Every structure is written in C-alpha cells, then in structure tokens.
Image (cartoon, rainbow, N blue to C red; front, top):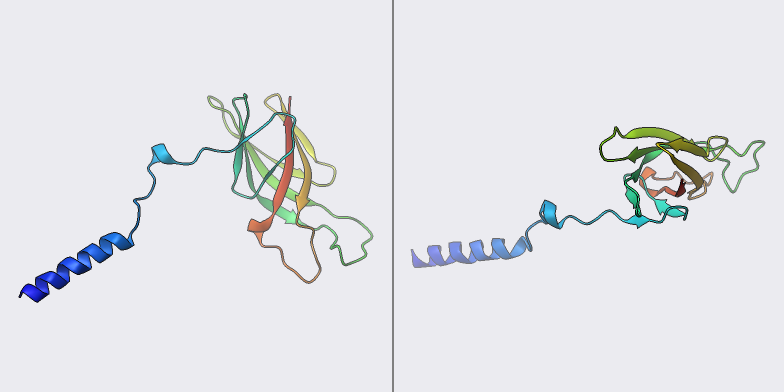
Length: 142
C-alpha cells in the first residue's frame, strides 16, 4: 500500500514539473511591436504593428494572390502579389483593404496613407511559397 501511495505521489510531482510555467495571463501578453510613422517596417501574415504616437494598428491578414514572375523564368509581364490588410483605430470600425505590388500599392484610410513597398520572398518556379513565409514591407504616413 505504501509503495502504491509513494508511486502516486512521485507521478503527481513528475506531472506537475513537466508542465513548466503556467501560461501567461492576458495581463502578461506580449505588446504589439511599434513602427514609426513614415518609416518602413515589415510584417508577416497574421502580425500587426502599432504606429508609434498614433492611435492606429496595421494588421497584415494574408497574401490573397501571388502571380509574380519567378526569378528563374523569363516572363512577358512582371505579375503582382496582393495582400489583405486591416487598419484598426479605437472607437471606429476596422477597415480592411487590399494592396498589391502592381498598380494598387497605396491607399488612404482614415487620414493615413499605407504603401506596400515590397513582398518577399521572390517566387521560384520550382518552389511553392508557404503562406506563412511571406513578408510585406510597408510604410504608413499622414
């Protein structure tokens, strides 16, 4: 009987230790990174950035399409990558919009001009880009 109780206690202690630290509470959640107004910054799909000293946050939702010419192929047209973004401002509705590397590189939303400078990585004919691997370089200005 004692060995059974001892085994249960050892198992309970081992299980408690294996869980490590408790998950962070909402109060301990990491802060959203900040970007300076007028300075380029990068986001991956699902990431967001507060605009320093401004009441807005820009969210890069996802790449909607990517038909850019692969770097290892000759193309007649360059093609474009198109992403979905969202501008969040407390006290107002969030506004979603698209930007691309072609003609629609820039949009003005709630007095802020958002410009898509580039999308990487560059496509290759033999490699499929994982949607999580995209990086958008953006500038937000007034």
